[in-house]
Length: 475
Image 1 (cartoon, rainbow, N blue to C red):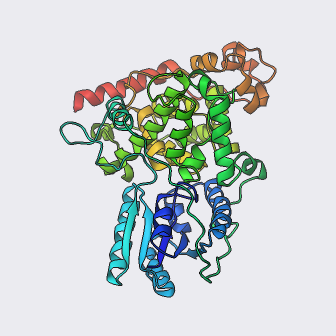
Image 2 (cartoon, rainbow, N blue to C red):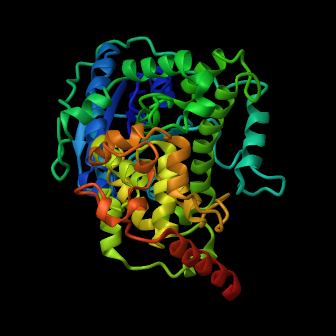
Image 3 (tube, rainbow, N blue to C red):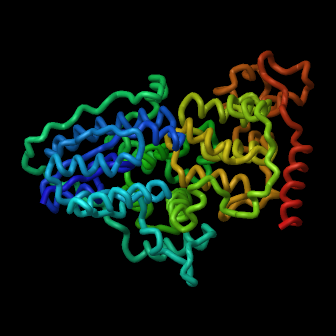
């Protein structure tokens, strides 16, 4: 029976559940569909689309070594996919289409529509667990609901993992040639600008680079991850998020790599390893939230009562935040890092998000959208979960009365101002003390070209607290 694997966010040959199942079941072809209008509707960043294409080209070569031809099709959006998939199946006499599951509302509706269309022409649909360790709906509270609190989810997940880890799927053996030519992978897509070569160089494509990055992190920085991860001037994180989001590496590969360096221990042993496993489980948790609470995929707050918050319409302040011109160096450096690299250090994502949603009292959805439009690792579940955590509108979120002070965050995690100087060269001449708060000496002494603060921290904190307190009173 001829198989078709429809690739989406699973751009790898190793440990690819659907690919392995397809090649075990029969002669296999692969398909990737380019949908630029859909990607624009989902705010996918140009650098992320470019990363997809570069990894797809690497994957095409790997599939070629397995004699699996990669077919490329293009459609405007996902509404056209039932016709595209049925057309490919008819053309190549496909008996079964296999996919690895995705979890957003639109993704699940898309797959339901395609599966129904395939059923109409007698083609079997098979979907596989690949992006996660647990199928959503199989890890539930005692009352049968989805977890809303990460610590409880983590406890249940570790209990499930302790007896046996999900194994990595071996690379399939090459099949006999099918006599079908692979399509060339385009180097660009209309509507998405090509990123700079400097940005591309930060994110080399292909499974080899992803696995090397994982091994280097696990061997060299994992043991110190619990404290290095908070220092933006240090190379202390794994830098794997883009590869995980695109499926160039799997969560199983990551988990096995860390456990091999931690004597197989999930919740003990090296503190850095334990903290990084927690980060993998946070990623898992937010994916489960997408399924259990679909409204978060639809631009809605997890905490329904927070929809009544009096968000401010302040386009000039929003633009200043977007371009790194707020007058708060740690926020501005973070935002400029995002624009230049397609990535932002995780602690700074929280600092920048809380500044927008609390100090500026601008709707978190504005920030969520801006991040997605620029992040090479943009992922609906993680990005939405992080923003709602920072804005105190989400599951397990930070209490509304906890606001990060950008000055103290800067002094604590970048004490010498190394990260600030990297991204804000106009502040380079300031002392290690003054660089965190250039306006403290007065507006006349601000370095040329650097703006004064766009908001007073004390006033903005009080404003945010009042907004949340009034919400409690009215609801």
